[in-house]
Image (tube, rainbow, N blue to C red; front, top):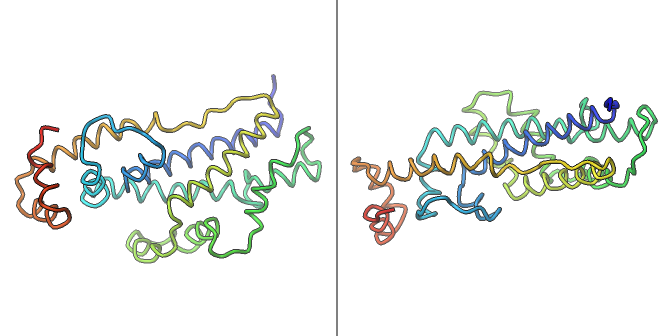
Length: 233
């Protein structure tokens, strides 16, 4: 069956959303494995002290720190394309096209209402407002400037995920009207990172660098450090 203009636009919104969700998942997981796993009830595929793993990945690994930052920026750029009245594939723009009959499609517009409420909010503390400031004023700068300027502007990961779930409900509702199922799960794609985390966990466990061991002992109590360095995990 030939796709309609509505199907083409909605399909692109879905793909942009899925990519943004992957980016947010990578950013969150690489910044705080413990926070991500606990939020979504995902089990770690190996035994470890989750507090120590969280610290090693989020604070002692430059590779994962860089990955988290890059993924977060990509998330911001993608999600603000969707949450817009002006962008080509913005949900607000799609709504206006249907409302003004520029696109002929028989769907209920009720599922747009939560998104439109968000887009029309004047609350400068809302997550979307913060994301748009990050996109427009800071992510055109150098990495050093971004790191210095944006900490106070970041929405929390919980706020970012709440935003995603709002869009996700919209997608489920509108695709249901088209009698179509959509795949929105990302956990299976992120599982490979959990296996990679084991290497980092084992690397620091066996490290001979006295300075690295001192840093860890300064951050955690002696009993926890002793169990980490001497366990068979």
